[in-house]
Image (tube, rainbow, N blue to C red; front, side, top):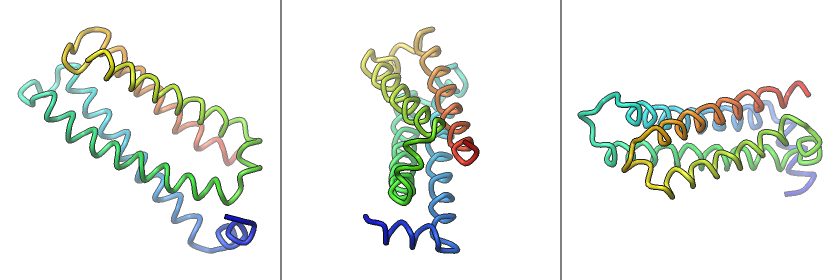
Length: 143
C-alpha cells in the first residue's frame, strides 16, 4: 500500500472515519465480551457453565479483535511514519503485547478451570490493560 492509497484514504470524506467506526466496533466486541467473561470468573452468573460462556464470549471477542486488527492495520497503512513516531501509539502496541501475554498466561495455566484468586487477578489485569489500550487509542490524536 503506497502513497496513493494513503492519500486517497486520508482525503476521503468517509473512508478513514468508517475505519475508525469499524475499529471501535471491534474493540467494543472484544472488551464487552471479556468483561462478560470476567463477571463469570468473579462468580456472577454461576448458573452459566464457565466453559460454554467462555466459548461464546471468546469467539465474539476474537471476532472483535480481528475487526480491530484489520481496521487498525488499514489506518496504520495510511500514515505509518506518523503513528510510529507517536508515543501513545507505541505504548498502545506495548499494551497489546501485554494483553496477549496475559491471555496466554490465563489460558496456559488453565485459569478457566480453576476460577481462583489468580484467575480473578488475571481478568482484572486484562480489563485494566484493555482500558489503557482504549485510552492510548484516544490519545493518539493528541500527541
